[in-house]
Length: 369
Ligand SMILES: Cc1cc2nc3c(=O)[nH]c(=O)nc-3n(C[C@H](O)[C@H](O)[C@H](O)COP(=O)(O)OP(=O)(O)OC[C@H]3O[C@@H](n4cnc5c(N)ncnc54)[C@H](O)[C@@H]3O)c2cc1C
Image (spheres, rainbow, N blue to C red):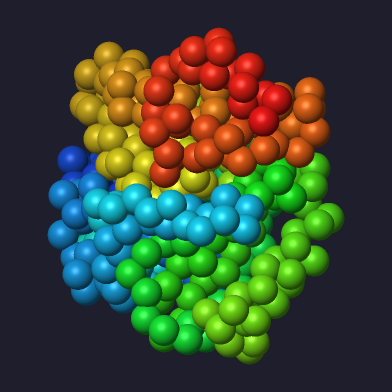
């Protein structure tokens, strides 16, 4: 079967795909993007927090901001919170954010096809779609999330995943911080309460192997917060999804003779400790689109530069997060449920997370504390 031929086919119109498609089209490529959902961004599978650093990349952020965030509070087990001041960011309306990015792609000339799922990619790089049609491209960009088909077709799979469950609840008093709950009962993850005006997202992520306890643990946390008067008992929304936590995959690999770039969650760019991935999706998407267009224009090094750019941008943070996550899981395997010191060392809100090595005597004390 042969179908439409494009310079670039982008799979997925989340933040990574929309940014990649818009950038490639702006640089002159003929781009087709396919998205399984009927509209970009809906239904939301996100806690909707973005860090201030995205302010430079996205000009319309004010229009999709629900409220500012100034601080992070980290609760270790039942202890009083430790406050990280100067933790600026925004709670956004993710549907509006994703929709606006997808509109920018369409305005740049991208042909966006919604409600169409990539079903299979053959060995020649031909894409077979759920509506029975097929597409061919000179470059493919896989921006199709944590369980990427494009990644799988080229041997790049996010093997380590955190599974999440999130409810939206009434928030009793306005709040300006993201609240993080670190507990031994949440292996490989944490719970969060992120304020969104009069509501809040209350969520929990755990290593995929512990997913059976998600529902009960989140219900327990909800009850606790209702009893303490912070949130209401009503459940106004429910979502969830997988978060890749195994680190960066190779950004470029061929499918047949067609180069296939990965961006965003598909490329494993989500932070393995925090689960944050929106900023990385935008940053990698912009670069993937640029690299694809440059390669089509004859810059034979452009795809190598994409790989190098991602390494330079993300590897330091990803390497540290992977090491901290592995240390916490190793602690649990060797000593049982992590103690407060181990939980603190595994979370970005604590200086221990950022030191390169703990002195051996401190390490011994923590192990036995
Ligand atoms: C519960 C939860 C809470 C989170 N909270 C935050 C947060 O507060 N802040 C943060 O920074 N990050 C958060 N994240 C992570 C963040 O949502 C992702 O990192 C981000 O969405 C990645 O963007 P993306 O464009 O790579 O992928 P996605 O946003 O996943 O977009 C991929 C798109 O590809 C489409 N697609 C998939 N397969 C196919 C196919 N075969 N054919 C066609 N289309 C396909 C999907 O429908 C989707 O629209 C959270 C994740 C979860 C699950």
